Image 1 (cartoon, each protein chain N blue to C red):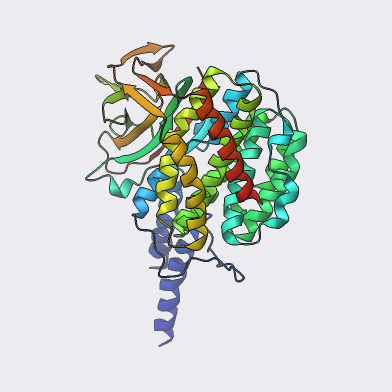
Image 2: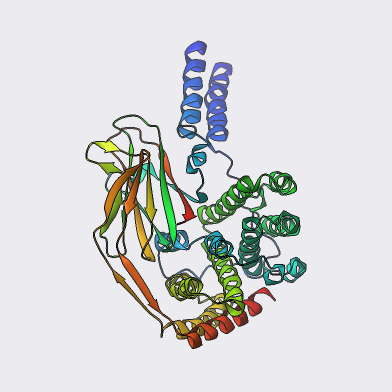
Length: 303
Length: 136
C-alpha cells in the first residue's frame, strides 16, 4: 500500500510540474464580478470564430496612419487625443474594451511623434482598464514607463506597446472573449481614423484624402464583426452608429487593377516590384461628410 | 528505476522548453528600420492539410516586410506567399531553389492581402512570421 501511494505521488508530481512548465505565461481569465454587460449565453456570434479572428487580424495598426501623418509633415496635436480624464466614464466591460483600443491608438500617435512626456497618463489608463478586464498582466507598464522616461528608446517603446496590445487582444480571443477583442480593435480603428480626419479637416492633402477613402475596406470589415454580436444591446447601438458612416462610404468607389509583379534581389534581400494599381474616387464633399460623421460617432463612443 | 524516471521526466521538461524556444526571441530585431506591426503565430498542428492563412490590409505608399522566423534548417524553412484579394500571387520568399528569410513589398495598391505560410518539409516545424512596415 505504501509503495502504491509512493508510486502515485511519483506519477502525479511530474505531470503537475509538466503542466505548470508548459503552460507558459497564460493566466486564467477571471470573470469580472460586477460586469453588467457580459454576453448572455444565448447571444452568440452568428459567424465563426475563425472568420472573426481573420478580420481582427486584417485591421491595420493605427501606427500606420500616425506614421503617414508625421511623414507628411503634420505637427503633433495633443488636442486630437481622447482626454485621459475620461477614464472614469468607462465603467462596463464593453466600454472598457472599446476605450483600451482608443487609448492604445492615442499612445501609438504619441509614440510616433516621440512626445513621451504625454505618454505616461495614457500608459496608466491602459494598464488600469486592462486590469479591469483581466488583461493588464499583458501590459508591461513598468518597462513602458521606464522607456517613456528615457527619450532615446522610441523604437523599443513602439515595439513593446504594439506587442502588448497584440498580446491583450490574443489573450481575449484564446479565452473566447472575442466580443471584447472586437471592441478593442474597433476603438483603435475609430480613434486612428478620427485623428487623421481632424488633420485632414485643417490641412487636407491628396494622400490623406485617398487614405481616408480606402478606410471603406476597414469599415466594411469592422461592421461584419460588430454585426456578429448585434443581438446584444451595446453592439446593436454601435452598429447603428457605424451604419450611418457606411451609408456615406457606400457612394465611394474603389477600383483595383492587377499587373503581374516582378522580383529582384537588393543587398541580399528579396524585393517585390509591384505594378498593380488601386484608385479611390472621393469628392471634397464626401470627405467633409466622413470627417463630421467620424467625429460624431467617436464623441458618442468615448463619452 | 528512480534514475530512469528522473531522466525521462527531465527530457519532457527539456522538450517543452525547447519547443517554446525554437525561434529566437529577438527575431523582430531583423526588421531593422521597419516598424513592428504584428506577429503571425502559425499553428503547426493544423498545417498538415492546409497552410496557415491570415489577411491584412496593405496601403499604397507603405513598404511592408514579412519576416520568416524559423529554425533556419535546410528542409524545414518557412515559406510565405502573399496573394492579392483575387488570390493572384504577388510575392513568395521561395525563388527557384533559394528560400529568402524575408520579403519586402512596396505596396502600390491598397487592399486586403492574404499571407500564406507553410514549411518546406519538416516533421517538427516551428516558426512565426513578423510583419513590419515603413513609408516608401
